[in-house]
Amino acid sequence: MFGTGNESRDFIHVADLIHQIELVIKCADFAGGAINSANGVELKIKDIVDLFVKQSAWSGTVLFN
Image 1 (cartoon, helix red, strand yellow):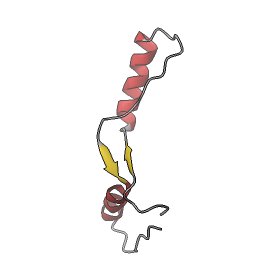
Image 2 (cartoon, one colour):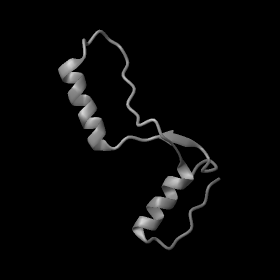
Image 3 (cartoon, helix red, strand yellow):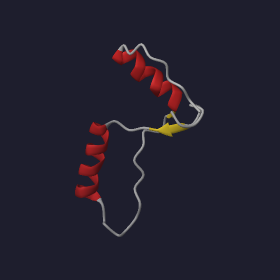
Image 4 (cartoon, helix red, strand yellow):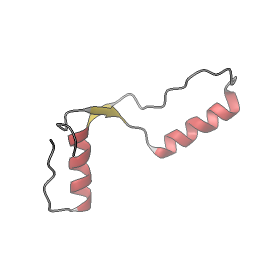
C-alpha cells in the first residue's frame, strides 16, 4: 500500500450515492453548482484495509510505505 495508512477518506456506500443521484435528477436546478457526495465520517485507510483483510480471511501481510 502507498502511504502510511494514516491517510483518511470519507467513503459513501454505492446505494447512498445512487439515491443522491436520483435526488439531483429530480430536484437540482442544474446551474453548474458542485455537489459533494460523502457520509461525513472520516476513515483511515489502514482501518479499511484491516476490514478487507478480516472479511476476506486473507492470511498475508499488508505493508505500507
